[in-house]
Amino acid sequence: MNPYFAKLGKLIYGRWQEENFSLTAFPSIATTALEEQSPSESVDLEELIREFLLSDEQPYQSASGFGQPELIVYDSPKFYIQLLFWLDGTTDIHQHEFSGAFHVMSGSSIHSEFTFEDAESITAHFRIGTLKLLKAELLETGSTVPIVSGRTGMHSLFHLETPSLTVVVRTHSDPGTGPQFTYLPPHIAVDPVQSDTLTNRRKQLLDVLERTGDAEYPQLVAEMIGRLDFERGFFILQNCITHLRNLGVWEEIWEIFAQKHGHLATPVVPTLEEIIRRDGIAAMRGSIEDVEQRFFLALLLNLERRSDLLEMVKRKIAGDPLEAILRWSEELIQVSESGVWILDACFPEALELDKEAQPGIYLIALEYFIRGGKIPKELKKLSKIDLALLRESFLRSSLRVLLQD
Image (tube, rainbow, N blue to C red; front, side, top):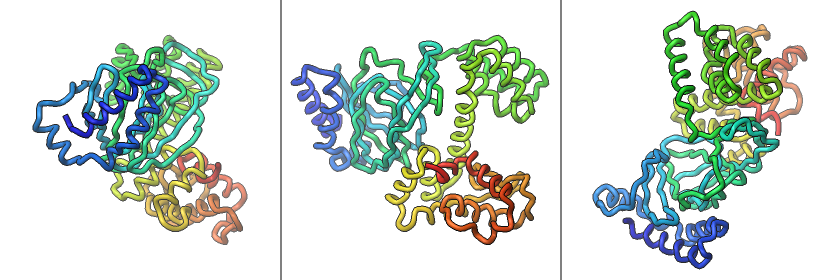
């Protein structure tokens, strides 16, 4: 066992014992210990990796699959300490069935905290409501944050560097704080531990029919949606929406779901649209190597407020944050047979301008909409309807955060 983590674990255990192992006291105890004995300043990572690989004298290793990988570096009957490697950013908004604290040992992360308002339980494992961002912050190496179990501790942590390392001091489980919901913004909460294997197999079978071009696919999905309950119907729609749109039958299928479930169906489309948006930006980020562009995409994935986004750009990039954003937007513009794109914003087809002029006009329009001021001369020849079309194209995209606060 690594001597630093053995010492840290004994320190936390002793202090917690003095508080009679109060769950309420544990986050504060863990946070203070991590700040006093900072892993980012105290741990020789190369030595720890070598010792972990070559010595069998290690704590019990879980089979959780959490982290990439997860190393258990201290274990006791009351709590344990894990070192988590992250090779990919994670966008899941979640709550915990455990409490403690986490410490950014290497890298940096976007940390966001949320609340879920007007919540209504459809089943014990599926809820609808409205997810709202409370605050967002940039955590640098050395930052420590308490973990509170239950619904008051909803958060997300998106790791910016590869790899990033996080040290987590945590209880095994806090009774009465489950399920450990994952939140699909803006309106759905699901229990990721609850696995409906029949629904999973049905989704896999539908994927087979999609790949083989089965002509019965739309009819089968329509019949399923007409028969299934709200929770299972949602997961089928989530699985099938892209293919149904490609087939031109999405509206027809959606109408079946909407009629069956009435007002409960209202939050579903915004949630499915947000899942598609996040998946698209995450896929773009996975194909880009430029560090600054990846940082920009991470901000668009995780932030809802213009002020938060500009503040984080200021902390990472010298100079005017809007200049940096416009530079990244220009670098990321794509021109193809499908049109002119700035990330997931597409130049409006209804605006009939020469194709060679469209990229330049689109960038000028983006700058005008995010900076304000006088209309640039390049846009003065456009009608109010044309300007409205351009603005609407950005408001439907991930760049909308820059146009509003």
